[in-house]
Image (cartoon, rainbow, N blue to C red):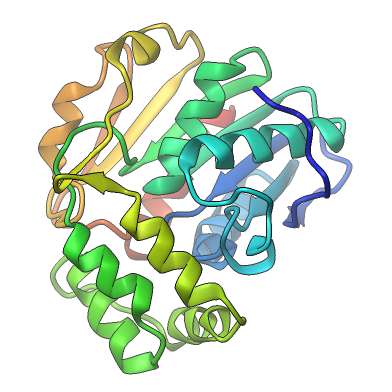
Length: 261
């Protein structure tokens, strides 16, 4: 994996800055590290020793201008290189949606530093993807449009907080952010299907891998869990949609806490 990074990536630090147990969080397409806030709060209440690094994905938020940002493979290269730059030799890794695909690519390319892998409704586990909704999410910039998109991406009755909406509105006010999201969305599929992570890559992952998925996911259908290797531990969230870090933060935190122990 490339390590020729011209400048550092931004990541927000939570918890014990000097902690020996490092957790890296990667959000999904169109979001920022702020989607993890409720998960982080729950984790630190139980695991105060954690040192948490929550990245904005390359092409998003504080890392909008990361070089070559867009494709998951490049995102994986940039984040792995940044972790090396920080001198972090061992870390637990968790990713949601597109961030889950990037986390998997990091673990496949450089497995030794990855102590555990937690995948929250990750991309790349099957060809089906609701790309029409994601393209609407990419171009959404107003609070009303973003709320409508998140409603379609979440399970029935999910509560979408004003704070979540405000964070997404602020992100999209960055010059060039919406066009970047539109470009990324345009590369997500070919003939309406997303690229799949090769089964032989997944089967070689030797670290503990937890997979958590909502049964009412309208973006990446729950039955894609059938494509995971048998050694992955599956956690099912009945009635939840795609936005699990915001819909079911305590359950996501529980799964990650089990992994980092």
